[in-house]
Length: 392
Image 1: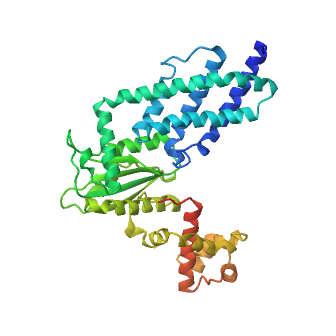
Image 2: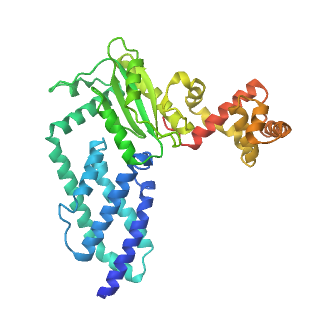
Image 3: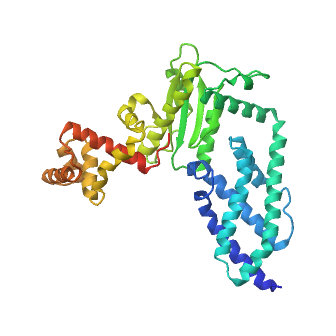
């Protein structure tokens, strides 16, 4: 039998390691690997810390956590279900997370700690079963809540519309009006914290008649269009709901918008809106709202599909030459103006000429020739999309 003092020290050391390993969880657990960190990080961090604290307290004392002790953990999980994640994924994440952290702790354990880990296996199973059971019970109890049911039905309607299916089976008693025309709005998040993204989602969710669902990178919202509105009036009203940001802070999110004048147009227009929002994110556009009319060149490259990686590879010869890559970048941004490029880089114009000549040598494309310059510009955009995990 392990001495009590030795056991307490081993538990403290294992707790410390488990708390440190929780930071790696987001990189290894679905759906966090598919969602922007800003969408989930606060809930993940808080939930992971609570679970680790509760489990090690249970392991130390042997006292089963009370319902009050697990209340916040349960509410975080229920909130993910409310946001549109399947309950089975939310519950399975406890198993995945426990396996990941337990495995990391075991790999770093000493001899005395290994003995303690063997004894901890059964309590860990008991804890996971306890918490997932309470989460499932809480979700089932919410099913009878009319507000919860309404959210579920509106989400099901959004899924049907976005996949080209008839939503009529979800719009019956109590009747939910499903118009024919929508403004498709896709949100992609930057690096802000989840509290900010949660506030944004609640603002959009409050729009009358909106159909909203969580997707693989943020949210997709379907905003009903009134008769005679080509989307401009609804887009303008949407802009008034978007939070403003200080000029010295990075853009917290991007909004791709596209108009679907008929239900049959919704799936294609949703693809367009997702592409535009992803362009905003990947190119770090200063403008929050992304329209196709403002991104015609970039949209063409983004929609090039299999050709995009090959186009991005055009600039690979410049990888060992960061000064050449920077000069080309500034040259393109300045409208292919050598004098402006020299001023912006604080170098002589002849140095710009020399560097652009080297770009020509290495890539085979002359930045001064219109057709080659266009290819280089397209390659630059393609590379940024590829390097930032563009995923429309």
